[in-house]
Length: 381
Image (cartoon, rainbow, N blue to C red; front, side, top):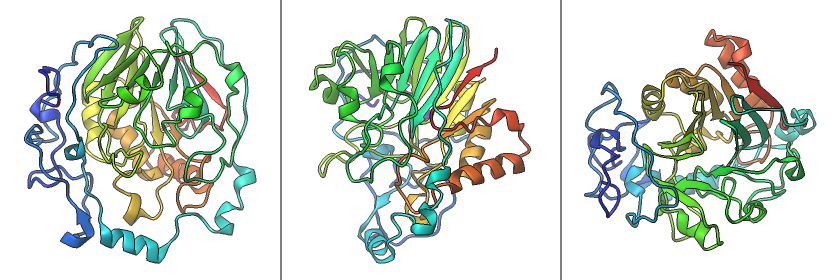
């Protein structure tokens, strides 16, 4: 159980193994690390190890939980980590080697970043369309609803240089926003100035533990979910699924709220997966098994260099393509690149690498929706 109150929707085989457990599932083979270089969170008695293994049959989908339900959660979700957080030795190496931003040659391609804003597509209740506003912010039209993912319309976020491409969809061009989904609480995914623009009765779907942040800002329709739980709004199903990431918004709240992605399913079965922010690992195949027939996967491809520092929490382009394969997704749209400079890779490299990886995997070029910032695509039924 992950709540203090009873829950019947999360089973033992679906919980990530605590990183301090000998039976923990590893996202990828990794080099050995000394005890001083990693800080392993303590094992929690409320989270059993993931004993079923990757070949276990998928559990049935959980019934939708009530919208706006008030719930009690553990004080910490640190035992959901699938890799330890960096320790003092890692921070010392990072300080010594630097490389938190690309050099001048890596920034030289900023004028070449694809930016092509256009009008939002016309849709009806049976149309699925996506428009990329930049970074992890999408306008998803599904089942007659307009859903924003991790909306960040601000020019600047805390601790990061100003965005290097403008917002691709003007706020004034948005139709009524029917719902918002949040993947986790990092500042480049949970942006208070943008959210202040929304009516306070906008339905918001958030990870476990994050509802209080919204209620303090007077949002009245907030639904928080654990991994593998779901809610439903006007016939569209919102499933919260695991990710290889973490959460933190201040010096004292590491992993106090959960993190994950969202699977949106229309009444007619059309399905879009929004990964949020994640490294590569075993969760993708499990998400695909439980949610077969994903029509489009919105997957992150940027903020990956240096790999020794970021591999556990951010996919590189090749891993994102493999994640799409693991998911069984019919199409992939890259995101989380070309907007904010968060790491050391050259700004245009994620795009060139994802195109090369897609071709190397032998996948149909038309199924890679490598949109410019501001670009849109409509899902043909």
